[in-house]
Image 1 (cartoon, rainbow, N blue to C red):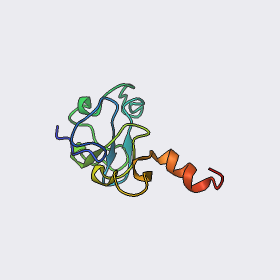
Image 2: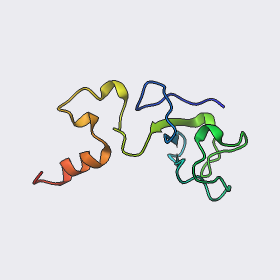
Image 3: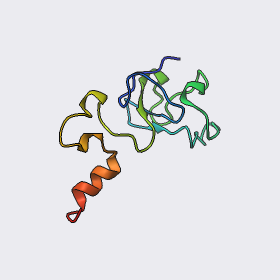
Image 4: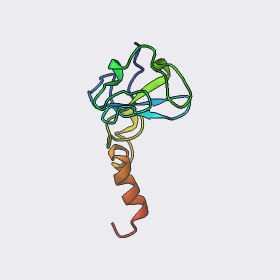
Length: 103
């Protein structure tokens, strides 16, 4: 099974990394598995059966990209060092910074 490159790290895959379908945006969460196909929680993306496909659009696993674990900084790894430090923040911290005028 081919695993696409990571957006959050160089090409290193960590056990709890999530994978997003480039066709429809579905995110496979290893901590949740997939109930529809009886994939138990804790099943890593690399351990999915060879016939597994995106439950939304039926795309093959080759269409998925590694988006890292929950709470990882969003965006491309090479861009995380730019700006005023907000690029290295996880999405939840960015939302607080943008939405909370008193922070």
